[in-house]
Image 1 (cartoon, rainbow, N blue to C red):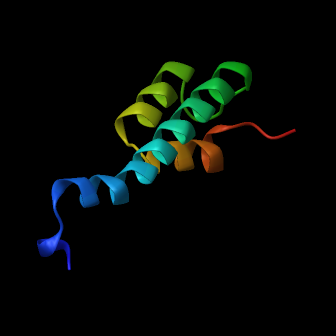
Image 2 (tube, rainbow, N blue to C red; image 1 turned 60 degrees about the vertical axis):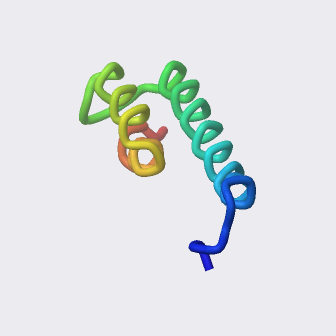
Amino acid sequence: MLGNMDMEEMLKLIAPVIVLQFVLMIFCLVKLKNDKVKYLPKWAWALIIIIFNFVGPIVYLLLGRERD
């Protein structure tokens, strides 16, 4: 299936995933700026969010924020 796709078709499939990843990363960086964190300093969480694309933001949302 993927072997028969040209670059334009492949881009149409990948583009929504790239946009979702970018939005999730920006959302988490804004939350990081405004929230208190636990386990690591904010600069370390920022690196995790940026370097580990989908996984980093999800880990931050699950473990990194202090909940009231």
